[in-house]
Image (cartoon, rainbow, N blue to C red):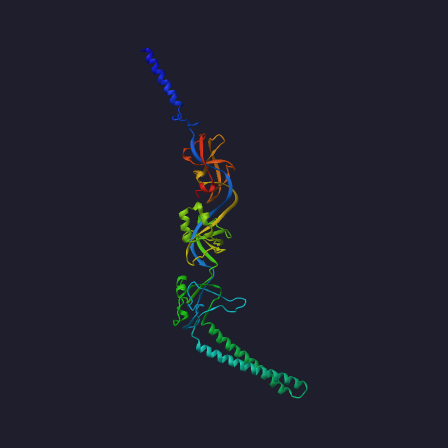
Length: 412
Protein backbone atom coordinates (compact mmCIF):
# COMPACT_ATOMS: atom_id res chain seq x y z
CA UNK A 1 0.00 0.00 0.00
CA UNK A 2 2.82 2.30 0.89
CA UNK A 3 4.66 1.35 -2.27
CA UNK A 4 1.55 2.18 -4.33
CA UNK A 5 1.24 5.65 -2.77
CA UNK A 6 4.90 6.41 -3.42
CA UNK A 7 4.44 5.24 -6.99
CA UNK A 8 1.49 7.59 -7.52
CA UNK A 9 3.44 10.58 -6.15
CA UNK A 10 6.44 9.81 -8.32
CA UNK A 11 4.19 9.33 -11.34
CA UNK A 12 2.52 12.71 -10.81
CA UNK A 13 5.93 14.44 -10.50
CA UNK A 14 7.11 12.82 -13.72
CA UNK A 15 3.91 13.88 -15.48
CA UNK A 16 4.32 17.47 -14.29
CA UNK A 17 7.95 17.50 -15.42
CA UNK A 18 6.96 16.25 -18.86
CA UNK A 19 4.22 18.88 -19.12
CA UNK A 20 6.58 21.67 -18.19
CA UNK A 21 9.06 20.53 -20.80
CA UNK A 22 6.38 20.28 -23.46
CA UNK A 23 6.39 23.05 -26.17
CA UNK A 24 2.66 23.44 -25.62
CA UNK A 25 3.27 24.91 -22.19
CA UNK A 26 5.17 28.13 -21.52
CA UNK A 27 5.65 29.46 -18.04
CA UNK A 28 4.79 33.18 -17.56
CA UNK A 29 7.85 35.40 -18.11
CA UNK A 30 8.62 37.96 -15.43
CA UNK A 31 9.58 41.54 -16.52
CA UNK A 32 13.20 42.36 -16.00
CA UNK A 33 12.06 45.38 -13.97
CA UNK A 34 8.44 45.05 -12.87
CA UNK A 35 8.54 48.62 -11.45
CA UNK A 36 9.49 50.30 -14.77
CA UNK A 37 6.85 52.73 -16.10
CA UNK A 38 6.23 52.73 -19.84
CA UNK A 39 6.62 56.23 -21.36
CA UNK A 40 7.13 57.93 -24.69
CA UNK A 41 10.14 60.19 -25.19
CA UNK A 42 11.69 62.75 -27.47
CA UNK A 43 15.38 63.29 -28.23
CA UNK A 44 16.31 66.97 -28.14
CA UNK A 45 17.45 68.49 -31.41
CA UNK A 46 17.83 71.87 -33.07
CA UNK A 47 15.33 73.27 -35.55
CA UNK A 48 13.90 76.48 -36.96
CA UNK A 49 11.25 78.09 -34.78
CA UNK A 50 8.93 81.05 -35.18
CA UNK A 51 6.66 82.75 -32.70
CA UNK A 52 3.45 84.19 -34.12
CA UNK A 53 0.92 86.71 -32.96
CA UNK A 54 -2.56 86.33 -34.41
CA UNK A 55 -5.03 88.99 -35.47
CA UNK A 56 -8.09 89.34 -37.68
CA UNK A 57 -9.27 92.11 -39.94
CA UNK A 58 -10.80 93.04 -43.28
CA UNK A 59 -8.58 92.83 -46.34
CA UNK A 60 -8.61 95.74 -48.76
CA UNK A 61 -6.90 96.46 -52.02
CA UNK A 62 -4.05 98.92 -51.52
CA UNK A 63 -4.98 100.74 -54.69
CA UNK A 64 -8.64 101.31 -55.46
CA UNK A 65 -10.35 104.07 -57.37
CA UNK A 66 -13.94 105.26 -57.25
CA UNK A 67 -14.57 106.39 -60.83
CA UNK A 68 -17.12 109.22 -60.87
CA UNK A 69 -18.39 111.45 -63.69
CA UNK A 70 -17.68 115.13 -63.12
CA UNK A 71 -20.59 116.16 -65.34
CA UNK A 72 -24.26 115.26 -65.29
CA UNK A 73 -25.85 113.41 -68.16
CA UNK A 74 -27.18 110.19 -69.59
CA UNK A 75 -24.90 107.18 -69.90
CA UNK A 76 -24.43 106.68 -73.63
CA UNK A 77 -21.59 104.14 -73.66
CA UNK A 78 -20.25 101.29 -71.52
CA UNK A 79 -17.23 99.29 -72.67
CA UNK A 80 -17.87 95.91 -74.26
CA UNK A 81 -15.52 92.95 -74.58
CA UNK A 82 -14.40 91.34 -77.81
CA UNK A 83 -17.30 88.89 -77.65
CA UNK A 84 -19.77 91.74 -77.28
CA UNK A 85 -20.51 91.43 -73.56
CA UNK A 86 -20.94 94.62 -71.54
CA UNK A 87 -18.31 95.39 -68.91
CA UNK A 88 -18.84 93.14 -65.88
CA UNK A 89 -17.58 92.97 -62.31
CA UNK A 90 -14.41 90.90 -62.24
CA UNK A 91 -13.26 92.03 -65.71
CA UNK A 92 -9.69 93.23 -66.10
CA UNK A 93 -8.97 96.58 -67.77
CA UNK A 94 -5.85 98.40 -68.89
CA UNK A 95 -4.60 101.76 -67.65
CA UNK A 96 -2.09 104.21 -69.20
CA UNK A 97 1.30 102.86 -70.25
CA UNK A 98 4.50 104.04 -71.87
CA UNK A 99 2.89 103.67 -75.28
CA UNK A 100 -0.72 104.58 -74.43
CA UNK A 101 -1.37 108.03 -72.94
CA UNK A 102 -4.86 107.30 -71.60
CA UNK A 103 -6.38 104.23 -70.02
CA UNK A 104 -9.23 102.26 -71.54
CA UNK A 105 -12.50 104.12 -71.93
CA UNK A 106 -14.93 102.34 -69.58
CA UNK A 107 -18.02 104.55 -69.76
CA UNK A 108 -19.13 107.83 -71.27
CA UNK A 109 -22.01 110.28 -70.98
CA UNK A 110 -23.88 111.62 -74.01
CA UNK A 111 -21.67 114.46 -75.29
CA UNK A 112 -23.03 115.17 -78.77
CA UNK A 113 -23.38 118.87 -77.98
CA UNK A 114 -19.87 118.99 -76.58
CA UNK A 115 -18.52 117.17 -79.63
CA UNK A 116 -20.03 119.78 -81.94
CA UNK A 117 -18.51 122.56 -79.88
CA UNK A 118 -15.13 120.84 -79.98
CA UNK A 119 -15.38 120.47 -83.73
CA UNK A 120 -16.11 124.19 -84.07
CA UNK A 121 -13.26 125.10 -81.70
CA UNK A 122 -10.80 123.01 -83.70
CA UNK A 123 -11.87 124.81 -86.89
CA UNK A 124 -11.33 128.19 -85.21
CA UNK A 125 -7.88 127.06 -84.04
CA UNK A 126 -6.96 126.00 -87.58
CA UNK A 127 -8.08 129.40 -88.91
CA UNK A 128 -6.12 131.24 -86.20
CA UNK A 129 -2.99 129.27 -87.02
CA UNK A 130 -3.31 130.15 -90.72
CA UNK A 131 -3.60 133.86 -89.83
CA UNK A 132 -0.56 133.52 -87.56
CA UNK A 133 1.56 132.01 -90.32
CA UNK A 134 0.56 134.83 -92.68
CA UNK A 135 1.21 137.50 -90.06
CA UNK A 136 4.57 135.95 -89.17
CA UNK A 137 5.60 135.89 -92.81
CA UNK A 138 4.49 139.53 -93.28
CA UNK A 139 6.32 140.57 -90.12
CA UNK A 140 9.55 138.95 -91.34
CA UNK A 141 9.18 140.72 -94.69
CA UNK A 142 8.52 144.06 -92.95
CA UNK A 143 11.67 143.64 -90.83
CA UNK A 144 13.70 143.13 -94.01
CA UNK A 145 12.14 146.18 -95.70
CA UNK A 146 12.79 148.34 -92.66
CA UNK A 147 16.46 147.36 -92.66
CA UNK A 148 16.66 148.45 -96.31
CA UNK A 149 14.80 151.70 -95.36
CA UNK A 150 12.02 150.85 -97.79
CA UNK A 151 9.32 151.35 -95.14
CA UNK A 152 9.14 153.61 -92.14
CA UNK A 153 8.93 152.78 -88.45
CA UNK A 154 5.16 153.24 -88.27
CA UNK A 155 4.47 150.68 -91.01
CA UNK A 156 6.94 148.25 -89.45
CA UNK A 157 5.20 148.56 -86.08
CA UNK A 158 1.91 147.70 -87.76
CA UNK A 159 3.42 144.47 -89.11
CA UNK A 160 4.65 143.64 -85.63
CA UNK A 161 1.25 144.41 -84.02
CA UNK A 162 -0.54 142.18 -86.54
CA UNK A 163 1.84 139.35 -85.73
CA UNK A 164 1.40 139.74 -81.95
CA UNK A 165 -2.40 139.88 -82.34
CA UNK A 166 -2.39 136.70 -84.45
CA UNK A 167 -0.24 134.99 -81.81
CA UNK A 168 -2.75 135.94 -79.09
CA UNK A 169 -5.58 134.64 -81.29
CA UNK A 170 -3.94 131.21 -81.56
CA UNK A 171 -3.35 130.97 -77.83
CA UNK A 172 -6.96 131.91 -77.14
CA UNK A 173 -8.24 129.29 -79.61
CA UNK A 174 -6.02 126.63 -78.01
CA UNK A 175 -7.33 127.54 -74.55
CA UNK A 176 -10.94 127.32 -75.77
CA UNK A 177 -10.31 123.87 -77.26
CA UNK A 178 -8.53 122.65 -74.11
CA UNK A 179 -11.45 123.81 -71.99
CA UNK A 180 -13.94 121.93 -74.12
CA UNK A 181 -11.79 118.79 -74.25
CA UNK A 182 -11.40 118.83 -70.47
CA UNK A 183 -15.17 119.04 -70.24
CA UNK A 184 -15.32 116.00 -72.49
CA UNK A 185 -12.94 114.15 -70.15
CA UNK A 186 -15.30 114.99 -67.28
CA UNK A 187 -17.96 113.03 -69.13
CA UNK A 188 -15.75 109.95 -69.46
CA UNK A 189 -14.53 107.24 -67.11
CA UNK A 190 -11.12 105.81 -68.01
CA UNK A 191 -9.02 103.18 -66.23
CA UNK A 192 -6.33 105.04 -64.25
CA UNK A 193 -4.27 101.84 -63.84
CA UNK A 194 -4.27 98.16 -64.76
CA UNK A 195 -6.88 96.60 -62.52
CA UNK A 196 -10.05 94.62 -61.97
CA UNK A 197 -13.61 95.90 -61.85
CA UNK A 198 -14.86 95.49 -58.28
CA UNK A 199 -18.26 97.17 -58.64
CA UNK A 200 -20.21 98.60 -61.54
CA UNK A 201 -23.39 100.49 -60.66
CA UNK A 202 -24.50 101.97 -63.99
CA UNK A 203 -26.26 100.87 -67.15
CA UNK A 204 -26.62 102.52 -70.51
CA UNK A 205 -29.48 105.02 -70.40
CA UNK A 206 -29.11 105.86 -66.69
CA UNK A 207 -29.05 109.56 -65.82
CA UNK A 208 -26.08 110.30 -63.60
CA UNK A 209 -25.08 113.34 -61.52
CA UNK A 210 -21.91 113.83 -59.44
CA UNK A 211 -24.11 114.40 -56.37
CA UNK A 212 -25.25 110.78 -56.42
CA UNK A 213 -21.82 109.66 -55.20
CA UNK A 214 -22.10 109.14 -51.42
CA UNK A 215 -18.80 109.42 -49.53
CA UNK A 216 -20.29 108.88 -46.06
CA UNK A 217 -18.35 105.61 -45.71
CA UNK A 218 -16.62 103.04 -47.88
CA UNK A 219 -19.72 100.87 -48.17
CA UNK A 220 -21.79 103.81 -49.42
CA UNK A 221 -19.01 104.83 -51.81
CA UNK A 222 -18.81 101.32 -53.25
CA UNK A 223 -22.57 101.24 -53.81
CA UNK A 224 -22.94 104.70 -55.37
CA UNK A 225 -19.79 105.16 -57.47
CA UNK A 226 -20.50 104.37 -61.14
CA UNK A 227 -17.43 102.08 -61.28
CA UNK A 228 -14.97 100.91 -58.61
CA UNK A 229 -11.58 99.67 -59.81
CA UNK A 230 -9.06 97.78 -57.65
CA UNK A 231 -5.54 96.48 -58.03
CA UNK A 232 -5.79 92.70 -57.35
CA UNK A 233 -2.05 92.32 -56.85
CA UNK A 234 -1.59 94.32 -53.65
CA UNK A 235 -3.66 93.99 -50.48
CA UNK A 236 -3.55 95.42 -46.99
CA UNK A 237 -5.12 94.34 -43.69
CA UNK A 238 -5.71 96.70 -40.77
CA UNK A 239 -5.84 94.93 -37.41
CA UNK A 240 -6.28 96.00 -33.80
CA UNK A 241 -3.91 94.10 -31.52
CA UNK A 242 -4.39 93.70 -27.76
CA UNK A 243 -1.90 95.83 -25.87
CA UNK A 244 -0.07 92.83 -24.37
CA UNK A 245 0.61 91.32 -27.83
CA UNK A 246 0.86 94.54 -29.82
CA UNK A 247 4.06 95.43 -27.97
CA UNK A 248 5.89 92.67 -29.83
CA UNK A 249 4.76 93.64 -33.33
CA UNK A 250 7.28 95.77 -35.23
CA UNK A 251 7.46 97.32 -38.65
CA UNK A 252 9.05 95.01 -41.23
CA UNK A 253 8.23 91.71 -39.48
CA UNK A 254 7.16 88.91 -41.86
CA UNK A 255 3.54 87.80 -41.76
CA UNK A 256 0.98 85.62 -43.53
CA UNK A 257 -2.58 86.40 -44.64
CA UNK A 258 -4.97 83.45 -44.33
CA UNK A 259 -8.44 83.56 -45.86
CA UNK A 260 -11.53 81.92 -44.37
CA UNK A 261 -11.31 78.80 -46.54
CA UNK A 262 -7.72 78.09 -45.57
CA UNK A 263 -8.47 78.83 -41.92
CA UNK A 264 -11.26 76.24 -41.97
CA UNK A 265 -8.86 73.64 -43.39
CA UNK A 266 -6.32 74.53 -40.73
CA UNK A 267 -8.85 73.99 -37.98
CA UNK A 268 -9.61 70.52 -39.35
CA UNK A 269 -6.03 69.27 -39.69
CA UNK A 270 -4.74 71.02 -36.56
CA UNK A 271 -2.27 73.82 -36.24
CA UNK A 272 0.63 71.44 -35.76
CA UNK A 273 0.22 70.38 -39.41
CA UNK A 274 0.04 73.93 -40.74
CA UNK A 275 3.00 73.42 -43.08
CA UNK A 276 0.86 71.24 -45.37
CA UNK A 277 -1.17 74.37 -46.16
CA UNK A 278 1.76 76.76 -46.47
CA UNK A 279 1.16 77.25 -50.20
CA UNK A 280 -2.22 78.80 -49.37
CA UNK A 281 -0.74 81.39 -47.00
CA UNK A 282 -0.23 84.76 -48.70
CA UNK A 283 3.18 86.24 -47.75
CA UNK A 284 2.97 89.68 -46.19
CA UNK A 285 4.88 92.16 -44.04
CA UNK A 286 4.06 94.56 -41.23
CA UNK A 287 3.79 97.94 -42.95
CA UNK A 288 3.22 100.13 -39.89
CA UNK A 289 2.45 99.99 -36.17
CA UNK A 290 0.79 102.87 -34.37
CA UNK A 291 2.78 104.27 -31.43
CA UNK A 292 -0.49 105.15 -29.66
CA UNK A 293 -2.99 103.02 -27.76
CA UNK A 294 -6.65 103.26 -28.66
CA UNK A 295 -8.28 104.50 -25.43
CA UNK A 296 -11.58 102.83 -26.31
CA UNK A 297 -10.42 99.20 -26.29
CA UNK A 298 -6.74 99.50 -25.28
CA UNK A 299 -5.57 98.16 -28.63
CA UNK A 300 -2.70 98.97 -30.97
CA UNK A 301 -3.39 99.39 -34.69
CA UNK A 302 -1.13 97.73 -37.23
CA UNK A 303 -1.25 97.49 -41.01
CA UNK A 304 -0.05 94.38 -42.81
CA UNK A 305 0.57 94.50 -46.56
CA UNK A 306 0.91 91.55 -48.92
CA UNK A 307 4.30 91.12 -50.56
CA UNK A 308 3.20 88.46 -53.04
CA UNK A 309 -0.32 87.31 -53.88
CA UNK A 310 0.06 83.54 -54.28
CA UNK A 311 -3.70 82.89 -54.41
CA UNK A 312 -6.75 85.02 -55.27
CA UNK A 313 -7.97 87.23 -52.44
CA UNK A 314 -11.33 88.96 -52.18
CA UNK A 315 -11.41 92.66 -51.43
CA UNK A 316 -13.46 93.11 -48.24
CA UNK A 317 -13.02 89.51 -47.02
CA UNK A 318 -12.47 88.85 -43.31
CA UNK A 319 -9.05 87.25 -42.88
CA UNK A 320 -6.65 86.03 -40.21
CA UNK A 321 -3.09 87.33 -40.03
CA UNK A 322 -0.08 85.52 -38.56
CA UNK A 323 2.73 87.90 -37.62
CA UNK A 324 6.16 86.38 -36.94
CA UNK A 325 7.29 88.43 -33.93
CA UNK A 326 10.34 86.23 -33.28
CA UNK A 327 12.33 83.76 -35.38
CA UNK A 328 15.44 81.62 -34.95
CA UNK A 329 17.01 79.28 -37.48
CA UNK A 330 18.98 77.01 -35.12
CA UNK A 331 17.10 76.77 -31.84
CA UNK A 332 16.96 73.91 -29.32
CA UNK A 333 13.27 73.01 -29.51
CA UNK A 334 11.26 71.14 -26.87
CA UNK A 335 7.82 69.72 -27.75
CA UNK A 336 5.01 71.37 -25.81
CA UNK A 337 3.78 68.06 -24.41
CA UNK A 338 7.13 67.53 -22.68
CA UNK A 339 6.82 70.77 -20.72
CA UNK A 340 5.59 71.05 -17.12
CA UNK A 341 4.51 74.45 -15.80
CA UNK A 342 4.54 75.11 -12.07
CA UNK A 343 3.84 78.71 -11.21
CA UNK A 344 6.43 80.87 -12.96
CA UNK A 345 8.84 77.97 -13.42
CA UNK A 346 9.08 75.34 -16.15
CA UNK A 347 10.32 71.76 -15.90
CA UNK A 348 10.71 68.58 -17.90
CA UNK A 349 11.64 64.99 -17.04
CA UNK A 350 14.98 63.88 -18.49
CA UNK A 351 15.78 60.17 -19.01
CA UNK A 352 19.38 59.24 -18.17
CA UNK A 353 21.51 56.37 -19.52
CA UNK A 354 20.10 53.99 -16.88
CA UNK A 355 16.52 54.78 -17.94
CA UNK A 356 15.86 56.73 -14.77
CA UNK A 357 14.03 60.07 -14.92
CA UNK A 358 15.11 63.31 -13.27
CA UNK A 359 13.04 66.47 -13.01
CA UNK A 360 14.96 69.40 -14.48
CA UNK A 361 14.16 73.11 -14.60
CA UNK A 362 14.39 74.80 -18.01
CA UNK A 363 14.30 78.39 -19.21
CA UNK A 364 12.15 79.18 -22.24
CA UNK A 365 12.73 81.38 -25.25
CA UNK A 366 10.61 81.61 -28.39
CA UNK A 367 7.18 80.00 -28.17
CA UNK A 368 6.38 78.58 -31.59
CA UNK A 369 4.01 76.27 -33.40
CA UNK A 370 6.66 73.53 -33.41
CA UNK A 371 7.26 73.70 -29.68
CA UNK A 372 9.24 76.03 -27.43
CA UNK A 373 12.85 77.14 -27.54
CA UNK A 374 14.97 76.02 -24.58
CA UNK A 375 17.49 78.66 -23.55
CA UNK A 376 19.05 76.63 -20.71
CA UNK A 377 18.54 73.35 -18.86
CA UNK A 378 18.79 70.94 -21.80
CA UNK A 379 21.20 70.07 -24.57
CA UNK A 380 21.10 68.29 -27.91
CA UNK A 381 20.66 64.53 -27.44
CA UNK A 382 18.86 64.68 -24.08
CA UNK A 383 15.84 62.38 -23.90
CA UNK A 384 12.73 63.91 -22.33
CA UNK A 385 9.41 62.33 -21.40
CA UNK A 386 6.54 63.42 -23.63
CA UNK A 387 3.79 61.03 -22.48
CA UNK A 388 3.40 59.57 -19.02
CA UNK A 389 4.57 62.66 -17.15
CA UNK A 390 1.75 62.40 -14.59
CA UNK A 391 3.32 59.24 -13.10
CA UNK A 392 6.86 60.60 -13.00
CA UNK A 393 9.04 61.23 -9.94
CA UNK A 394 12.79 61.66 -9.49
CA UNK A 395 14.72 58.41 -9.84
CA UNK A 396 11.80 56.44 -11.25
CA UNK A 397 12.72 53.65 -13.64
CA UNK A 398 11.07 53.91 -17.05
CA UNK A 399 10.81 51.88 -20.21
CA UNK A 400 10.71 53.93 -23.42
CA UNK A 401 8.03 52.52 -25.71
CA UNK A 402 8.40 55.13 -28.44
CA UNK A 403 10.70 57.96 -29.36
CA UNK A 404 8.77 60.76 -31.02
CA UNK A 405 9.75 63.20 -33.74
CA UNK A 406 9.22 66.92 -33.36
CA UNK A 407 6.30 67.13 -35.81
CA UNK A 408 4.49 64.27 -34.04
CA UNK A 409 4.94 65.55 -30.50
CA UNK A 410 4.12 69.15 -31.23
CA UNK A 411 1.21 70.49 -29.23
CA UNK A 412 1.62 74.13 -30.28
